[in-house]
Length: 117
Length: 117
Image (cartoon, rainbow over all chains, first blue to last red; front, side, top):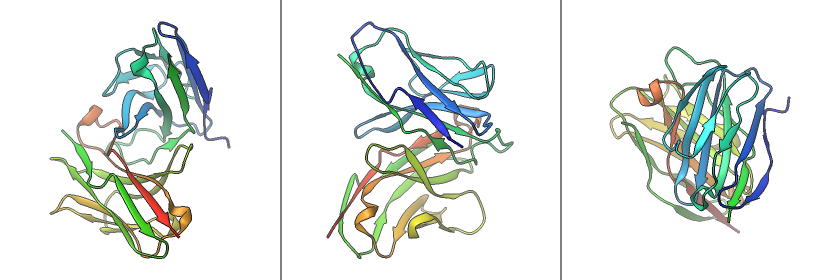
């Protein structure tokens, strides 16, 4: 199994450009999420999904869109890139939402390093 | 609201010495606690988790953590570190009401462990 696959690994954009960060998992996980990692800030949740067709906002959703048309894929779209979105982006997934909520460890991809000039 | 505080941003230690990385959390409800490790230019890997039961949790690579409900702490320990343990370590909490109990993780800001020969 490949686990969680993120593409591209690196990307440089100009301010105002748009792009899509891809995330795919082959573990049939229902829960998927996007985080951004900035120095000294830990990881902050951008958007998440508890299943196909269902998405919701996390802590820092502004400037990003997501959709979940299949169980496997959860792309993150930057609508109009800004220098403040320079970061490392991680996609994660875990098993079906448990009734208690939150007790499933998440599997992370290797990240996409995004620079916005 | 839940939050996670990692009290040390950097911890230098000599090889074969013991180490303890501190993590405090705040939550008014039951939570699940995790420690993740991030090696340079990689994604996050689960070290260990506390869901319920025994307060001493053993993980991979010889790490263990103790859940202390009265002190709201979940400190990570290793009795003898190796050069290969040099990495950034993240404490995380999930469960409760954040994000509608959907499995969202709240991360601390990370502790960089540097093991010197």
